[in-house]
Length: 131
Image (cartoon, rainbow, N blue to C red; front, side, top):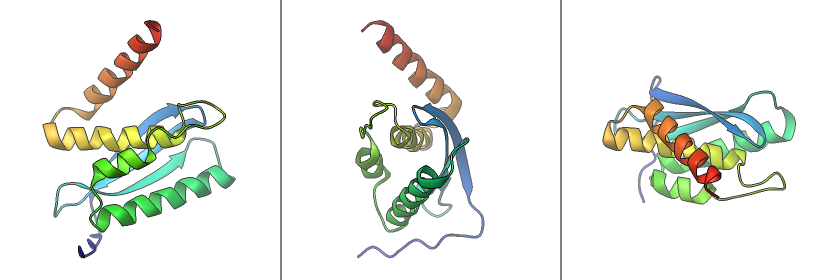
């Protein structure tokens, strides 16, 4: 069994704002100074409270625990991607998965994270226009 990564007192992170059918979602992905890979996430909604915030907090805790216990970040993205609801496929969970993916791509390639986000959004917009 992989030993659980101990969270340091301070760590570098990326906070990404995404729009979803649920409103604006802010995902903070913190990177381990030991491994250089994502070790935890925090999810906050722009103007939501109650159940959606509680669900976001629960998902954050589970994903963070998994990442610190050896879960491959790509598996975390896969697990929370593609889940739709009555509001459509642009759900808050997909926004969280995208944010984690952006951080992973930045860490792997060294590309500017803002450029990665802009390129993704342009691709999505072009796909929607061509459909």
